[in-house]
Length: 336
Image (cartoon, rainbow, N blue to C red; front, side, top):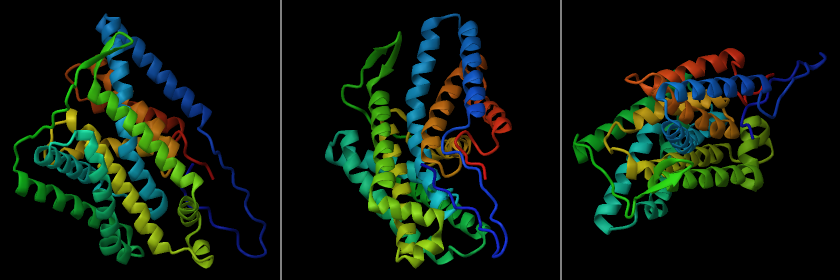
């Protein structure tokens, strides 16, 4: 499902321009992407010289990609409906990590059981943020909206720094042992996080696609004025959408907490990666965020084998540029 504004209609008396839309992914972009990933896998296998190392990279890449998809899901949802790029998305991921840390240490809860608290908390934070900060400036210039989200990100990071200090923290997952998968060994925490991310992504998609609330959200994304005329509360939908995006970021933060170093700026890397995933999959496209996350996760791990000692993001941006040359609007991006 794509959440994207509809194109403007033709003036009265003129013949409407016929728009071409593609609901599915671009075959050309998919072929290019799969071809690049296949070539990267062959090169990585040749350089590593070990099928086990290659299998480890592929499995880890897929599991990591599922988390990237969840982080990007909130970002693409907010952009698709509100047309705001939420630079505070990564800071919200970091905030959820710290909430998980506090709950585990104060109550002894299982790290993933804290989802029952962190997700509703982040949902409420997102709703308050949209109602108090963003709804009043929805008609303001886009740079004003960007500055608000950047300011919110800086505020969250500095509050975390003030309260918890700069020292890295960690959360321990009970029974976090290695599990053999296709010749690779993966920690249970990564498997749990991957499965949880897929479940939450599917739940979000079902809410948007199969419920009256989801219909209202898609209506506002397609035609806000038309939705207003049929009685839909536009501001309420904006609040709900931003809250869902914050909840997705919160869920991602809790899921990665057991295998990620917790620090105030921990969400910055997720933020940058999420932007790549959103553009790669198609701005405002929910299935595109899922596919884009898996692609980025695989590219990151294979790039680490091909270019040892370099930043994993180097390979990600190379694939990112190649795909955009083939399809500037992203793999699932619609062409009008």
